[in-house]
Image 1 (cartoon, rainbow, N blue to C red):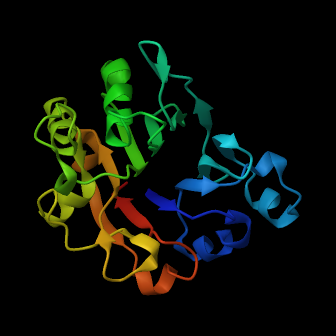
Image 2 (image 1 turned 45 degrees about the vertical axis):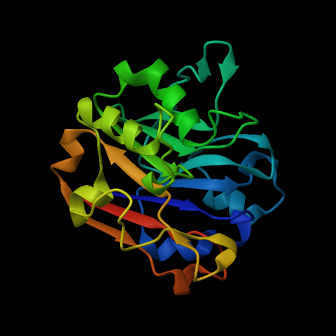
Image 3 (image 1 turned 90 degrees about the vertical axis):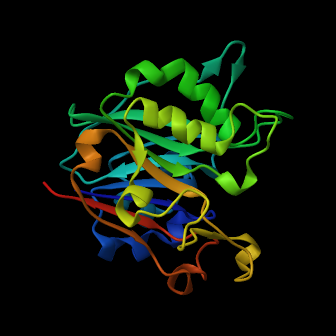
Length: 236
């Protein structure tokens, strides 16, 4: 099984063909348009098996799958107390495991933006994550931890680890959080501003089957996006 997560930086209808040769079973794509609301027939023909959410038809979060894969929207709660968080798209894959697609936002929150949004989502849905893959653009790294927050990036990583969920990139490379050698994002496509902010976390059943984790070369993708795809391959 091969899973790819990529922030396409919009207009996926003009870019999806670049993903074809990668032959992924599942694609988690951020900032893509809703296939149901586009007139681009090539895009809609390609996007036959998908789930999508978003605030506007032009930029949302989607899971795309091969035709032989069944996706079922799980409709987990995205509310923490009285406030919705965004964006999280949980789905069942062939009834065998759950995939939670992620694209965190600041969401007009002065205190709980980005990883804070995921921390809130985690508090509501933690009990459901015993057989899960969590993948996407978290807009976060432990280099931005702040001393007076209890939901720092490192705190959330540790909270996931307590329930057996780990980052597959870090598990595979044996690198530490905050010391990643392979950036996934270049701010304004500036090679002097590299950051690792995209992740794939997973339960032990998946961490024990990792075959390969690759961050694609930014040189290959920079004409398409400020993010590089992360490719995770598992043994069958």
